[in-house]
Image (cartoon, rainbow over all chains, first blue to last red; front, side, top):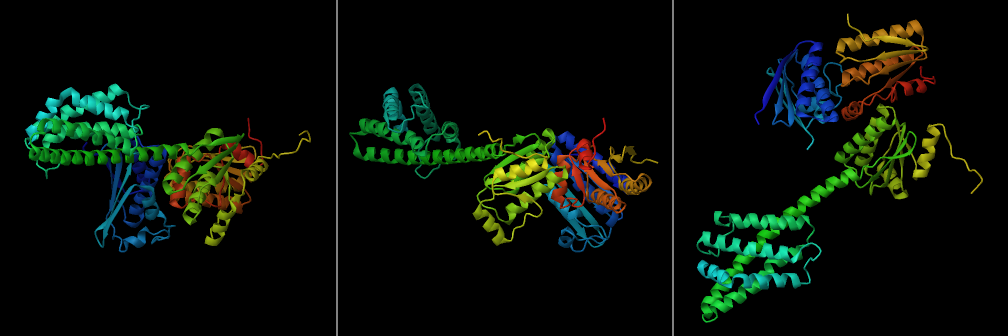
Length: 133
Length: 288
Length: 119
């Protein structure tokens, strides 16, 4: 089955986090995720999108269905990038005074998590949640 | 060479199958409870004709050849289906191995009968037949082992589900007897089942009984704590019961702290706590 | 401007969140609850989140703030109706709202405050 792009959304304002969650909710229902996995996906998305907004100065989100049994979210921003990725994923790390379970917490909620970042190129986070086997 | 085997098999015909079937059904390892003689006969003659077909298609028996090639495709499929089903139905390894082992006797008898006049040819034929049977045997062992693994994996999953029973002890009081090791996958499942039951039954207290949990290390304790935190978030309290002396000792030695959680050594003790939370207590009536 | 309604039920303030909270709305709610507590001096505040699908770290923190504010002003906050999936997710996030009282539903919330539920 081909992966299909459900939607691409801008992340420029706090309202956009709600939009990203909503788009993911639609995708999660299309795939048939159970309530726990659905909630974990939406919550992880919220953390990642907020990170892009507060640390990356905004960006974009793309929601895709994967092989009809998973949902993939990709969020990229145009910020300064994260210098120490491992550090950023550790609980309690924060550069903006928030509590900072954000990205590290999001990683625990999803099945697959990838973070690419470089100085000056921004940050791109990709996550997938699969339907329960 | 092939032609010799095929000729012998064709020549021996029904007689060979009869002899093989009676060897199988008279064996001490025969599972009369799982197999009807008619079925044995059907499977045995299907095997012989499949063998003839594969031998004919392969042209010559190369002693070094494996069964991977296209001519043996039909045979592989036949054996895979047969042995997979036997594995699933609970046949033991020796009972399964007998099928091919017992085939050797009538096969060699037939070879003897046909080639008895020519000892050199007979030795060659027996040698080739033995190699072939060994390769088939090896293949069936693999099929059987894989099928067994699948059975075990499935049973493990079923057990996982079975082992998360939520029991209603009293109005608003649930108990969850945990049996087996508590890993993170299991914990996830326990949480989901427990929380849903709490909501469905509007329970306010849940007793997690760990009598059946063999060891409690810091990871297990973390899993228990996570379960209790999740229950608290939806508005229910968890009590741990079944903390045996050895478990308590290990926990103290490892410095494991369950935090603010109420814990008791017995389910009765935990139930008493649960009753008091619900504003009830157990009193003696003086009748018994 | 949109806002989460705060209702007075006897001695209790009822906050029923039925929308997907965005950050500003959540922050505004904290201020609104503080104002309402100051005005009515209730015995407690029930926050019903049975309609909420996602509680992330931000919303979680706001809920924690509301509980703290109310406590400082002499009122208790009980969070009611959290969905199992939300609870499991919060625990996984390592955010288990330690300072907040919880109850299964609104009725239980009233009882937790030592009151009879209405109706």
